[in-house]
Every structure is written in structure tokens, then in C-alpha cells.
Amino acid sequence: MPYPFPLAGEKLRLRALETRDLDAIWTAYQDLELELITSGDTPPLSDSQVRAFWQQRIDAPAPEHRYFVIEPLQGQPGAGVLAGMCNLYDVDMRNRSAELAIWLASTELRGRGYGREAVRLLLGYAFEVCRLERVHLGVYDFNEGGVRTYERSGFRYEGRLLNAIWYQGRYWDEWPMRILRAEWELDRSMVTNGLRPYHTADYEGAAALLTTLDAEADPLRLLRYFWRDGYTTLWTFQVDERIVGLIPIHQKQTTRTFQLIYVLPDHRVTAQREVTRLLSHPG
Figure 1 (cartoon, rainbow, N blue to C red):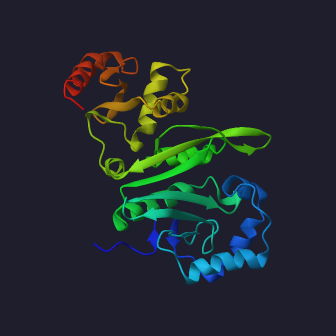
Figure 2: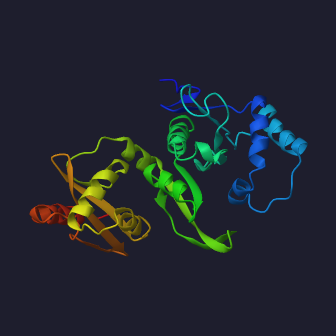
């Protein structure tokens, strides 16, 4: 089935960059905060330099870079004009990988779900059209909105780069993240009962479980602790379409261990049996 162009969702579409977008791009370049967190300490650029840079990419696009304008649909704030960009850089067709980057031009358009929908659409393009195996990115610690967007879009943590950027009077860390084709396909599948890998659709149910077990718990902080631990994979135990357990499985070298403290008491025996069966198989 042909892939739809432009790439359209419920709130926005991703379309090709056009000359009519250059005014909005030049305006975005005047946002020092946006410039600092995307390009870093770049030299001042004139209107003509910015326009020439982007016009060249419109006239002669390089195959290793795929630029998409984020354009809200009619009835949405900012409809019909450039609200930001969501791009693939360094597209490597031999190794089937690329880097994803996104920015929104106006603070008024942030927090409306545009970023997450744009990322979802671009991942569909990356995996379905380009047939990539891997998409990666880096996100700074202070960018909580971006971190949440990538977590909810299925990106996994791949480490931590300490003191990666100077911003607002201090150094911040950067989190490398990635999503593989198999992980993207898993996150598109229907959630099922039983023991299974954590799914991006599990967050609400997982948060409800954790607050049931401990009313003082901070679900996001706890989940993020496991997501960022390079030796841990998080599994979900679901019964009758309800999450009744979250089971961290830790692996170091050839040893795998697990915890049942985040499983409702009535389901711990069954959960232990299922995890034991899983771990009895190599790999």
C-alpha cells in the first residue's frame, strides 16, 4: 500500500519544506533559547545567510537528510503554517540508520501534543518508507517535554553523557536514545494479557498499579529508573486487560534475576511461575 504524502495525523501533517516557510524559519532563528538548545553557540547569521542555507536544501535536497515541516491542520492552533520541523539526519542506507531531531518554533505551540504526533509520523516514514533498522537521538536533561515525548514514542535509553551542554548557568547531561525496527513493531502491536515486554501504551496502567501499591510513589520517577538502567528490561504482567505487575528483569553477563515487589499480592505466585518459565529459556 502506498505511504500517504503528506504524512498526516489527527492534529498535524508533515510536508516538504517550501520557500514560503523561510520567513517562519528566520523568525525561529531569532529565538535565542531555541538556538542554544538546538545549535549551541553558533556565530550570528544574517537574514540572507539563513535564507540561502535553507533555500539550497529546498532546491537540491541531499538524500542523507530528510526535512519535514510540522504544519497543524485546520482547526488547530497555528493551522496552515510552519510550526516547527521534524527531520532525519545522516540517513545511512547501508546500515539502515538515521538520527531524528525536532523543534517547535513557538512556545505557544508546545505542550499541545504536536511533538509526539510528529515523531510518530516520522518514525512511520523511517521504518515503512526508508526501511530503516534504527533511529537514534540525543535529548538534554532539562528538556522534560522532549524526554517524555521520546519515552512515550518508544525510544529506549542507551547511556548517559555527563556535562554535555552549558545552559542557564550550569552543565546538563545528555541522554542518547534509540528505537529499533523490532521495538517499533512491538509498540504498534496490540497489548495482550499475560507476561510481556513493557509497551508504550502501558504507562497509565503502570502508574495506577504503582500508586495502588504505594500511595506516595512517584510512578514516572520509578519507571524512568528502570528504563535508564542498562542492565534491566521491564516486563508487564496483565490479567483481564489490567496491569497487575511490573517485573524488572536484571541481566549481568549470563545471570538474570527479577523482582516481584511491584506485583499485586494476589498475582505474585502466577507471575513468579511465568517469569521462571521465561528465564528457563536461554537468551
